[in-house]
Image 1 (cartoon, each protein chain N blue to C red):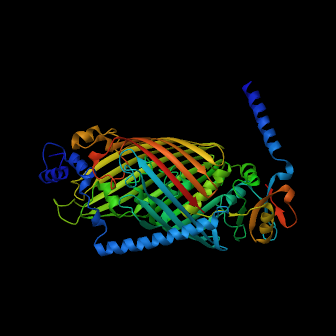
Image 2 (cartoon, each protein chain N blue to C red; image 1 turned 60 degrees about the vertical axis):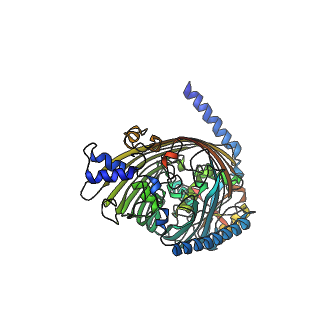
Image 3 (cartoon, one colour; image 1 turned 90 degrees about the vertical axis):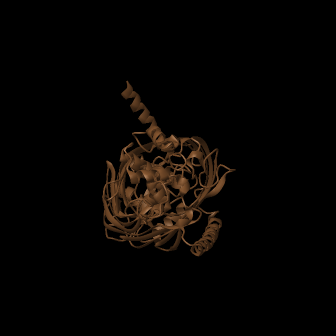
Length: 457
Length: 144
């Protein structure tokens, strides 16, 4: 019974406060490991008509975007990749990536385990306008297809006013207002643009698909400062804003299931201190965020959760060393989640850690190869999920994932590239849940083969 | 012994660089002669300008940056010996600016001829040429 209906069991236990296990343990089980098969995906979209409208709009938009990008692709094919200049100070840029994922087991961006999946597309169009050297307006629309729950996402990725208050060869200070990209680690700022990331699938230890929405961008303001000297460049970005992500993904990532109430991000803080030497030969950064997510129940207990407050504090240490042919990168993250209800009957405090080591080698301007080891542990006090399995009966492998990646990339021109990679994964901790509803059906050891073709200008 | 060896090695490297770059092909930073009469820029300023982090001249007028394609030999020489970075680093820094909404990339020109013409006719322009291509239409910048 425990295995079949854990959510029911947990709910009953919560009401009766059983003496056998401490309350903390139940909170832990309840919040993090709710049975995923209970997810009602339809609840996300509301009524059918609305659903239909959304799909229609999205198809039209996809079509327009697709034809626009195709036109651009053909127009640019014979030329060098560069921005389209509408006027002297308005620039347009864009990118389009189509991916193919084939997995031995488990689903990644669609039914990848059944003959492979093409359900992975990233397209973006961005414009920037510089009416004055101190003022810049920039915006980017992103279209993304990435498996169940992300069949046709269209979103404003960023839309901001950038004002430079002070700028000399040695100093730079300014502010960005609006929707800004969250400065986190080496790759988060441009994580959807294949040419700026090392592999088709970013190292999931740091750039989890699951918490993607919250880490993308935020609505608010960000201050930035930079100091250049012969010793290198020191830069600091500090922002406050409401992250995007009031959707099912956030609920799944934080509460472990789809509940009747609403999950909404609140005012959060983010910062990155970075140091670069010799034009980026040595790069180092510390990024941190304090993300505030709230759950407001729709029903009273025991039919719903109590109101909950989740504070997520990731701290990421990043390092990179670049030579003519080699680039070595490493990032290490400590991820702390504190969850509580107003009366403190719920209290959870779990810290996970994760890291990767990556070596990239450029054979020439066209070819590059990459080798990476990536590891993620949800709970550093239960790295291999043994306690978790003992408590819940659920697979221990949902609590960790290690990933050996080998990839190749070929730059056909400066604007076209193709990439291929192979992953050997042990664990399922970062596997997107919407594609894999039943944790008992997940395989612990699995393989991924991915291909992608990408264009940008 | 190891110090001697190091000196020897450095010597070879220096010779190597010298032989790669005959003086007439050495890249020189150039600016539009009308808008920037005081043609002297610090290494910091040149790095900031081509890194697209400095957008205005001292008088507040906009800086217009022009470069050649990534694989162009003059661009490679300019990146390595003037900016002291590898071209791919420059490109990845520009891509990060463009796709995160925090900046722009330089405008690309296809040939040295085109570079000279556009810098000569665009107020606030900065670019580079090989020494042999310099003429009176543009001003060479001294590194101070």
